[in-house]
Image 1 (tube, rainbow, N blue to C red):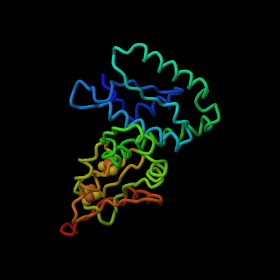
Image 2 (cartoon, protein in one colour; image 1 turned 180 degrees about the horizontal axis):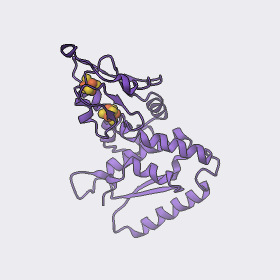
Image 3 (cartoon, rainbow, N blue to C red; image 1 turned 90 degrees about the vertical axis):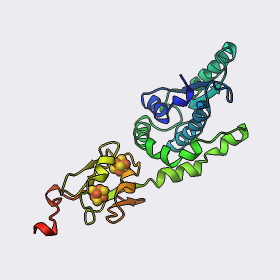
Image 4 (cartoon, protein in one colour; image 1 turned 30 degrees about the horizontal axis):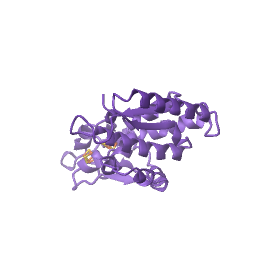
Length: 234
Ligand code: SF4
Ligand code: SF4
């Protein structure tokens, strides 16, 4: 219904599924029927996605966004024709001069896992309203996105500090934390979407959740070593 509903994940999923190009048609900017102006959100998402595409070796021209009213049928056919021609010139995804098909699939899978993280880190910018087309190109820079994706933060529970209070496990939105009463908690890194909720939820007196960047996350403590023996029960 609204171009603002087109999530970054939808675009990356389309490319993962082998689409050669993605076109988003939105209402004219500043002519939104509601107070939400979701087309600005869609524009920011596209500008961000194009830089991500560049980062993983995909031609950003495979993604297009255009704004028009429902009465502009001729304009619609023109922009869709132009985009179709452009995509044909670029050739099939992963088979032209861009990245190899298998490498592309694995890079898209990696970056799709990071979508929640990217949206959290860039949430302020994604909510901006760009009034000038001149601002589009440099709104998200390639350096900024390279840095964002090379300095991804991971979360890790320090087994020496965890007191098995279970707060983080209850708050994790994707059930990525394993643990129970009297059991040191561990994060399943494959499930973790790096939202940082556990980091904020762990009581400061425990401070058991750590952030790690630029180095591998330590392996989880073996299951047989996770039981916490409380002093009063010794
Ligand atoms: S950062 Fe923490 S709360 Fe967020 S998904 Fe990962 S484990 Fe769960
Ligand atoms: S909130 Fe902190 S202390 Fe409590 S279970 Fe999670 S990591 Fe352990």
